[in-house]
Image 1 (tube, helix red, strand yellow):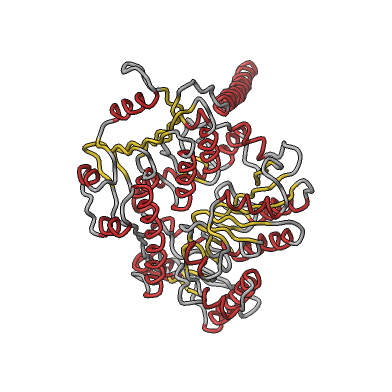
Image 2 (tube, one colour):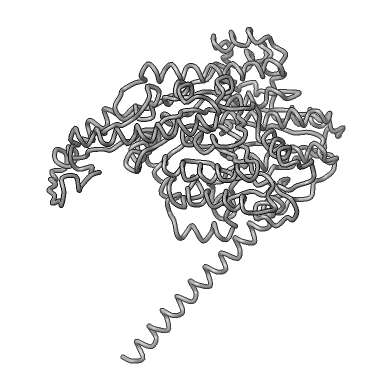
Length: 590
């Protein structure tokens, strides 16, 4: 028997050692793969940079799990623009191929990429686009190209913008969930999906306003590059005159109908290649210098710096995660930039619909303290609304895109009562013992009294008054005027500029130039330090074993399909803690 246990113990120890070694070897292999993928490959002479943009476009790129082999990656806007800028001056790169399908990015992000491509064309190099299916966004991006090829059997969408919202009142009624709503302002419609079945008049009014503003700007920019009168383009869009590829050609939205081999023939002519010679295409991942980007992010450069702090996602209390703006982490990043004597100015790059009003105020305080000692400039990306506007409003200058969605200055609170769900649907009753009349407040297992509802509404009113007072000070306008622009109303960047909520229409580069000028820095006089620091490949690998939320989300999306958005909205309702400064709905502009 002793011999038996000896062999069993030896087997267990061997298996454990084997598992540990396997884990270490896997980490080494994946780390090596990620490290090698970070090294840009040498570019052959007479090459074309190919941009597919088939991953989500975020402020900072992220490789998928397992060094990019496990999916879940994204293209970084900053890396993409740097690659296009580098290609402009690279003698080995003769042109850019936009091989586009359904581009996943916000309107302001696409505008930054489009402007970078327009700047690239100033070098005299060509840009050619190829579409099999061109969405509104992908066509807008490619509309600046020298040649636009559309597959003869392909389609091109050019029929205006829309934003679709799901309302969950009937779902909550059936489930037995009664949401108590506390809000300020007729336009603070973020909570309407919880208690309405359609848009309120004010929500519809503001959505029509900013969508038309963004659409009008887009049509104007397409008109410039395609040489078509804007009024004619508006008719083409509003009447949906484009039904197929021949329509797109006839209306001069594309220059040619052709297959990819014909695009290759075009590139051969531009590159002066023989007919049997394949054009050399360089992918974005092979061309991007991730290593130098990482060095800047980690602050390994010396001398004077401008710190760029990327705030992307929902604003939450605490440290947060890679996908949101944790108040602790971002307050620390701003504080670090403020206390670092090498940092001469700060750019706060914001792409956020808002979130916790408390977390927003914590970050706002650090912005305010930084403003007292060095320039801090806000650069708004696709969305900088509600809490996203809150963290920007103390900056010296606010820069927004014409296509930015901003404003939404307002707050709300939601407290669900699930007693009907428990009692009527599940047969569960709840009893309680308290030391005081209101000891169990807040609670989700009983109705609120009138006094409790008044108390919570008064707190929301107080926070709204504080938000608008601080916004008025930041914008140097009377609080009464600011509140006429507030009430939770959403504005486009153009509308916000006209109303004094932002200072300058421009992009990230505009904000960087303003920051340098305020700090009396000349071009080439400083380095960009990017904060917060992103996880290394090994840290990302290890985190897979610590947090399976991403895997769970992917599985739910696959299982629920189109119903996932309803589930996500329900989860958002259940997770809202405290008063929220958040954008109305989940805006998805198509």
